[in-house]
Length: 527
Image (tube, rainbow, N blue to C red; front, side):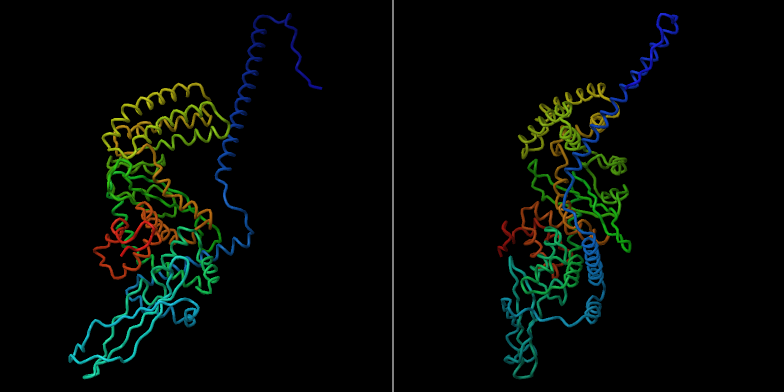
């Protein structure tokens, strides 16, 4: 039975006591209404959170032991790759490599069942360089290099005949062709395949080793780790040239994403960050080559952004991360907000509980994107004129609606937070109307991070901070190749076949848009 407090006899109360009773009853009623409203807000908040988590959920559960083994495998990959990278940077890499190899068992001969392709390299001289006498066969040196062509291995046999002079016995022989990794048995195609498998297809080295074993080719994980480290060192000048190109733009897209990184000696992961900076002016018809540069940092401190953008002057399109504020302070870099970030919380709200306010916000923002679809590819001046004529009135109406709606909502609701975020960056969000070079959103940067997110789903973390830095470098080359319409594996194969002998002061010649003449869109060399 429900017990209720009995009311006093109202006939016996004087006017003051009656007023006090009414006030007390009113306060109790208001308190209950506030509690109900608070509960409803909490329910909506939980629905929103659940909807977000369901969209973020990925992968499947694994046994604890399997995960520990994977962590150790990746950590070992990183240690051996770092060692190879340091040896490649040493002033005496040959001696260091020889010491390293002496600790290992002798290299096994390449499998006999693989097809072989023979290249005979004859000396340039047709007569003895000392006395001019006739050259005659004297012997030959034979070396083998394991190469990968799409879908299968092959062995390239390089034969360098030795010729001796009939008159003075001088020996003449062609110089051995250079290899991407000194004395390495991997050809540029195989190296490119290993890099693409690791960073684009997200296959850790120990899994690649298992796959190659099915073809009868035993490639130890530690050997491939040395290849990755050697390639990383070899590609450093090219990555730096890519960074200079990106930072010389007048407008950039920027974003970042968390990446779990194995903390050495702890068996646990910490959270690093991968930052992306995209130069892409194709939407307004500019012919400058698009490019993306990645950077890794062990945390998300604002000082990293400041260091990355130390040479950049122009307009930066990014989210509302406070770390960018220090970059905007002196006016050298101007903030451009992202309409996709304004839209996203309203989408989450509508998905969670079909909010009418969220639905209207989405419809109003969608009208802006209809205009953007129509003007994509037109000149910057034409885009500016159309935006001022059609988009600006829609934005002004949207702002007025935001302000009016705000007064009708609870201060603690998620809808209020979404509107306040939009109004707080309104001036920066409007800048695209006044400059046809700008975009309405930062989707160019977000697209560049998709490969990182897929990798994070597959093997969940990097083995070390050094591994994060290597990943950033290769992600940039792969992403830039894609932006320029190239097969990234074909691009890396071409670069690795040339970079060892390429003059460092002409390294820009190996950037994707300069090398594209040698590679067709299908990835096959045209020369």
